[in-house]
Structures are given as structure tokens and as C-alpha cells.
Image (cartoon, rainbow, N blue to C red):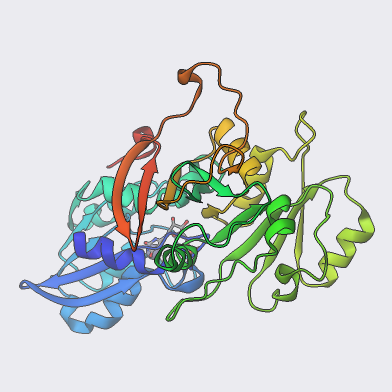
Length: 366
Ligand code: AOF
Ligand code: ZN
């Protein structure tokens, strides 16, 4: 299952709205077929593994990182394909929360005498498919917040200078992280200040994620880099419903997607509504790359699921710009705590990965 999980992660960021699933077929201790969900979400992992194994799929054991689907899509359900291929046993990590599946895939296999074991690697699979689970069960994507800061938590000097706080190894890793997400999200302040491109510029990088800008009044300039690179990667603009119609029309004509969202009582975009709309457009995994105000708003509303921090051994002082804006904490307990998952070196920086405890109630196994 560890190998299936590793293989399944390969397409993260490219299969939305579907999860990136891994499937291995093992016969007499030998790997006879291997599959991962394909870009755009189809074909599914099992189909690929069965096609690769051919006749050798008969009596093999399938290790799948998500319950095989039970609904008849364009190429038939994976549970049926496994039955037709004569697979003898299925080891499945976690039940699929999609209401069209929800335990029926396992039940279909068992009904035809296939031995089904569930729950193997469920914690890892739950993490890998967290974005998909959130989209199905909570109707919002999973949000990972990336913070690249100095040792004292600053992202720019008092004058706004920020190039470069973390080293080139960290910055390369950010590009790799981008490729594993469906979308990169920033606030309009960062779009104005940095004029970023937000594409994946790494060798072997596989396609560009959607770029999402939260821009309530559509103030983004039409000659910014994000606009000039619409041909390379989609650009989606979340704005308030009452935004200027002419601006909306102009952006739509340029190839961007404009998404009208509710306004919060604080006058900014209602982030819950923004995330619901993005989930409806199919996104499951979003990497938020700032700025400090958006980071603070997401944290305040408890919408940040993971934080990945790149920290440089540089000190910029109290007058510099903090990575996270005002949170109005009076007591330490007003702050939000995350659990440390991983810490490592990246060149001269450190990377630390923090997570909100997984909501285990979301994951069932039958
Ligand atoms: C699998 N194997 O590799 C994936 C699965 O729209 P469809 O027909 O492609 O079905 C999408 C659903 O299939 C998705 O919501 C999820 O329940 C499941 N994804 N299932 O057996 C796979 N990616
Ligand atoms: Zn399937």
C-alpha cells in the first residue's frame, strides 16, 4: 500500500475534480500492473493497472488508495472492471465519500466473492485525498498556506523589498509544490505589489495550476503578468457581485474567468463563499501564497488546513512586514495552533509542515 500511495500522489494537482488515486496489481509477489488517475481525472487508476496487467490481472491482489468506484461512468465502474479482470482480492485504503460510491464499490466486490480488506494505509490516504474529501463533504477545497519568511516572521522590509528572503532551493521547492496543487491563490494586494506570474517554472514540471486572485473590485491591471500569461495558465478572478460590469466583460473577453462572490460584513469578500464557489468549479487543493492580510483572514476564519513555512536565517526587525496580518489576539489561547508534521533543511533555510488535526469523523471504512 505504501507503494500504491506513493504512485497515487504523482498526479496530485492534475486530476481535479477527481482525486489522484494509485492502484497496484500484485500476482505471486510480483508487480503486474500499476496505475494512477490520469490528468483531468480519467481514466481511473484501476483501469490503467488492469490494462497494463492484461491476463496477469487474473487472481491478483489489487492495492488501491481509494475505494474502487461503483458508478457506471464513461468506461464502466472500477469495481466492475476489477471483477471482469478476475482480481482475487482487493486491499483498499479508505472508503470513497462520493455519494455515488460510498461503500457500494466494496459491497459490489464482496457480493461476487472477492475478499476485500479496508483501512490499510487509511491515515496516509486520508491526507492524500483530503482536498477531494473536503470538496465532497464540506463543499470547499483544502487550503495550504505557504509562508516564506525571515527568522522573525517577516516577508518584506518596511519599504516592501522582499527579494530574496529565502534561498533558491526553497524557491525551487515552492515551484514543485505549485505543481501538486490545483490552484494558487493570492489577494489583490500581493498581485499589485509583486506582479507575480505564479506559474511552475521547474524542469519536468507538469502543467500549470489555475491562478486565483481575490480582487473584490477588480482592480487588477489588464497588463499585469498574470493577465499576459493567461495562455499558459488559467486566471480566475473572484470579485464581489456588484463589481463593475464593464470590467467583468473585459476580463471575460481576455480569457479570464470571473467569479461573483458574496461580500462579508467587514466589506471584504466572504471567504467561505469564495471557497464554496471554487469547489463548485472543481478545485480540491489550493495553495495560498499570500499576502499577509489574506493569510490572516483565512486563519481567523479557520480555513487554513496546512501551513508550509520556509524560514531563512535572516532577521528584518519589527518595522518589517509580518507574514500574517492582524489577528486581534488578546490571549495566547486566541491564536490558532497547528501540529508539527515535518521539519527539514532546504539549502540554508528550514521547511516546516504544520497541519490541523485531521477530522477523523470524515473518514469511514466499510
Ligand atoms: C476510482 N479510481 O482513480 C478515481 C476515482 O466522473 P467519474 O466517472 O470519473 O468519477 C469520478 C468519481 O470517481 C470521483 O468523485 C471519485 O468518487 C471517484 N474517483 N475512483 O475508482 C480513481 N479517481
Ligand atoms: Zn473508478
